[in-house]
Image (cartoon, rainbow, N blue to C red; front, side):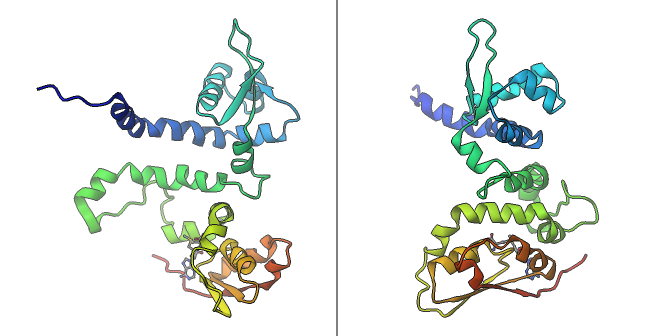
Length: 242
Ligand SMILES: C[S@@+](CC[C@H](N)C(=O)[O-])C[C@H]1O[C@@H](n2cnc3c(N)ncnc32)[C@H](O)[C@@H]1O
């Protein structure tokens, strides 16, 4: 007896399988600085101008830009009907979430996914077979532990800040903490969640406990706002070197 399944279910399976291609389009565009370039440009740019600016092959750049447009990461306008060439610019969402000039930039987090996380995920069959004994430094420099990477890299701090700046307000209000006079975010990085907590709970003293090297840079990244003045930083913790 024939089994009837909807085409949408096949699409769902293919979407999962082909997801890595979409990721690579995004990761590559970020790595080549395309979103940053368009952010700084006064006007939309052609593929030729973009490829010159990023010193890449023009045809391959065009294909990458068209993939971005297909995925809704870029807008393609003024398209020549014969050649298919056009001009590219950022969407509102890519300007908000994928450019270093934006306070809600997720680019550092996506860069960590591309550089640090994507390679160990390639070892997933091995991890499932081996269970808790599985270990990989795949994708990390030899001699650097994961803790080393995630506690000191400025990109990691940018990654944590981007994510929490976007989602932190909802996190801060997910529980009613109004009865507490002191709130401490342990492992709170440079304080993105703490600033949301200080804004949500004006009567609370909010502190962040994190490694000394993280606290050292936190002061330089303090936002200018009244509630931000109520956040203090406590350096501590032990860094395990292996
Ligand atoms: C995954 S991040 C979480 C950041 C933040 N809580 C958030 O959700 O965005 C982990 C944080 O823990 C800090 N950390 C790691 N080991 C630590 C230790 N031994 N003592 C104190 N902080 C540590 C790192 O520096 C980093 O900021």
